[in-house]
Image 1 (spheres, protein in one colour):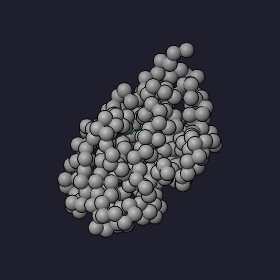
Image 2 (tube, helix red, strand yellow):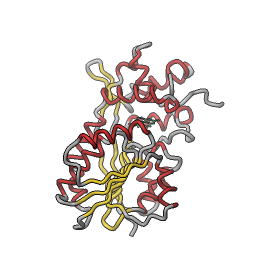
Image 3 (cartoon, protein in one colour):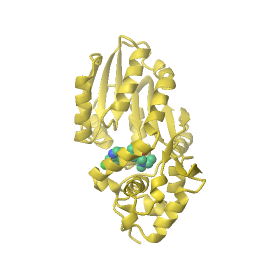
Length: 294
Ligand code: CQA
């Protein structure tokens, strides 16, 4: 049966609305910040190998909030180095926001920003086309591998850009999260590979293991309050459901059977815990840190 459901990515304004609400209802950004301030410094200490110049690539940087926090930890670990930061971001609005923040924030004079308004795949073509030989010391891909055709191929390309002692950092939802359970259960209905991949760090680890690639991994506990999803007709609940399923107007367009199944699974102990009348969805993230090809 052909899927009658439209992806949320087709309506960017609704995507941004549901994403903003997700950020308010979840600890996603806080848990990333905790990782950046507590674990990332040791990872950053191992890059660069005493060089006075460090090359960074941010893939899917959005408005740069998380990037700038990482760059400030990089500065603390490597005082006095200059940084070349390639920003890869397809949304012109997000890139514009990033540029404004950079122009207003003091203390970024040691960083040269190169703005690439393009997708990761376009960046790969552009890099290969220009026969670039520049290597990177630190590359990060945060919550973006869902949106490439072939996550394994994209990961391999960016890994091939790492200099000796470089690190490639990937953040995705954990295979053990509610997302993983939701996607394993409803892949036929919710995962349209033309639009986005239902990929978790579990899948990436399997790929790396089968290729004999060495990496480190971390689990970041994170929650999302999805209580409003269970109030029929609740506007915010519907926005959150759109975000969870990545389907535009899921409540209005999904079959009643699919809707009932998804709602039941979302509050099932495999996905959520219920306490004090709240339904708290497991939004755990996984971090993978990959070494260069040797
Ligand atoms: C578009 C596509 C994806 C976006 C976006 C716009 C996105 C956030 C904001 N704007 Cl056109 N994606 C995103 C970011 C974090 C995140 C999720 C999506 O946790 C949720 N899932 C990805 C499929 C599930 C983990």
